[in-house]
Amino acid sequence: MNKAFHIMATVTIMLSLFSLVTQSTAEEPPATQGSFKASAERGKMIFDTVCSHCHNATYEESRIGAPGLRGVLERHDVNWLNHWIKSPETFAKTDKTAQALIESNPFGLTMPTLPIVQDEHNRADIIEFLKTLK
Ligand code: HEC
Image 1: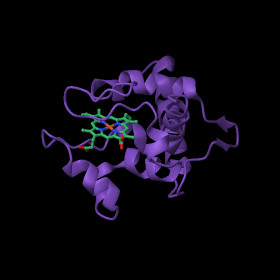
Image 2 (image 1 turned 30 degrees about the vertical axis):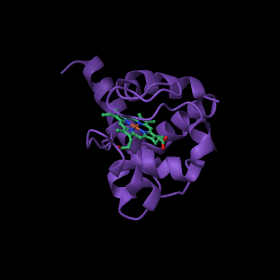
Image 3 (image 1 turned 120 degrees about the horizontal axis):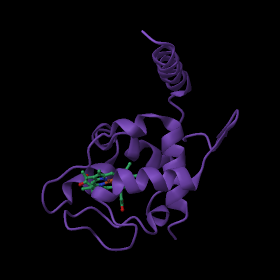
Image 4 (image 1 turned 180 degrees about the horizontal axis):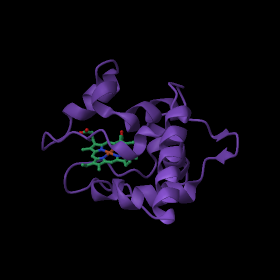
């Protein structure tokens, strides 16, 4: 094993430990925490990579019946969004709005629970980005 591999492995382990430590059950993801500050730019990168497969960043519903996310903060508050984005299915078990939203999809499609947003900082970044879609 070479040195570069060791460094990579160490960094990977440290990063996963870090994300374990930073995952909490807070109602709202932290806009700031230690050196972390929620960033709409990082949020946009996640949106473009993951969310945009199903969602438009406009008012327009997508072809698969996912709501356009422009103006979404007028429909839901940050707390609601944090729960929904983390796991729509889990949230729908206790939240009537989430349940109704899932049932409203014309194709019977449900937004999946996505690995990238299990990290609360990533959720904070995405929500920061959603705030810019006014
Ligand atoms: C595989 C498709 C898919 C992906 C990927 C996806 N969504 Fe969704 N999303 C949906 C669908 C479909 C709905 C409508 C509710 C339902 O049927 O589950 C929805 C609903 C939502 C809503 C509620 C919108 C409203 O107007 O009430 C938000 C917010 C949302 N998604 C955010 C995101 C974010 C942020 C990401 C990326 C991290 C994402 N979604 C990724 C399919 C997807």
